[in-house]
Image (cartoon, rainbow, N blue to C red; front, side, top):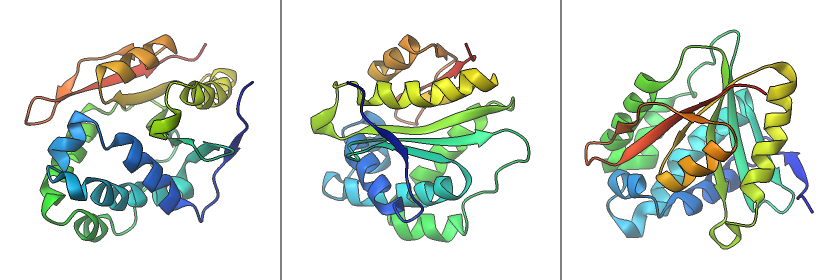
Length: 194
């Protein structure tokens, strides 16, 4: 049975950020961003709250009814989306001494981002104890139905080979990877509507 999928409300930026931070904490890229393991989830949650708040204003955030999984989509169609409000100050407050590393990542993401109209899957996160249960697939399928109906492509940056392979099963085609300064790859991927 598929889980119930619903839009996340504007007051849920912090819970969205905390779920993403918890789900992403084990990633190699995150270890480079925040080398201090004891602070990793807190720093990530602060950073992701900026992005979740922005997506709740300018994008689409979906969750399973139990909030065990969430997807964050930023439409890149029509007029350009403004940057997150007061981003530089908020990034510094959230990331502190690790801010330069987050700026490097921002620059890499920006350099690889396509200019064609699309919806950007900024985050797909599943609570660690629920991973492998099909919740991420349910969230992808939910938005892909809309994208396919309206002929809109999708783009994302997979953070490891496992997620790259998951997205490939959903029609995403890998592009040339880019790497963090320590060599950790990200895999940009593009999906044409079906």
